[in-house]
Image (tube, rainbow, N blue to C red; front, side, top):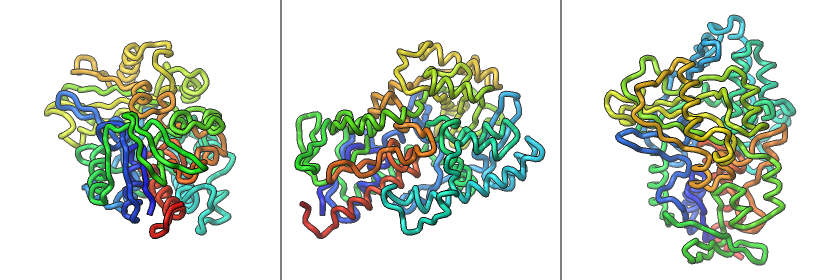
Length: 481
């Protein structure tokens, strides 16, 4: 049995803590905020509730396996897309309905979508046997040689989109999946194209009361497993000596001895401050940061006819938008805008006769003080673009609260406010991300900035990968050394 200290109570940290406690280890979890969940968080004001992090749950079986039994609502319409020319595409959960919708939008492309979906299925199956199954340093026994080609190695996501579709709107729809990893589709690997297989084959789900309630469920499971949880407890150092982890030091001056330290932090925070390692920090910097997010959390008066739970309002020039994000490092002048309105399906999220709108724009991971526009001026620009695309909120806004990269950095220690740590840039990007086992015996990493990546199901898978590593390195029933 090992004494385990988990630094950070995000989903990855909670899952690894839960599984290790169930395996028989003594586990403590330290979270600097007063609530568990990490980016699975919410913002409340005047009877309105907004999700600050994930707004769609995929692969719910990952959480069912952990013991989460909360009721889930499946969305028949995964997302509604509006393109710059005013045309629309409803992404239906059912693959055949989706193919028919693609055919309606662009005659002749329905068969191409079926072929693309079939490729995505093969890519997902290969990824499940390899990338999602464990650390990249240990090829799983289920892996096949054909898995290497199933993920279209050497091709970018944008290149995959061009190969799959001749219609520019559908190419933009495919390229959008790079934003799930905070990356540039013109440089991100084609393997991100497996996401449609996740959504259309396994569904997109909403949790009544908001997705952050999943964190409450995991917190109850931690209590049942007798994990010691310390909230408002910031770890400021991982103490190591003799090539192994010895303790974690708290900001209040306390020190807790441990055999295992699991850093559910941004990898740059670990190697920059908690256990400085310049060489590893340079490797992370070489990846370049993922994008960040600019959120407008709006209390909207009245009800909007025909509003979807999830909507994407595309920019006119995707290449220029990502050039702004990753090359010119400025908020796009013509941004794609995500609109989430959970109150469409969940009246608890807004007062009667009103709606809670979460509007998200991808922005660079850098301090807003270095933007050419102030956050308030950029808010106005986003609302103007929204009005131009059919959603004029003039006279309907009760309030608009902002959440910027600076908030991400301050709240979560995120590198420059980057949502996912390093960006996926280049065909070998997944292999360049920090691994789950650290450079000291007993040190492990979990969360969106390390393998296998960000997003609810992936960070939960990462928690399982780390728990398996710890159980292998520190078997229960054997003395630690």
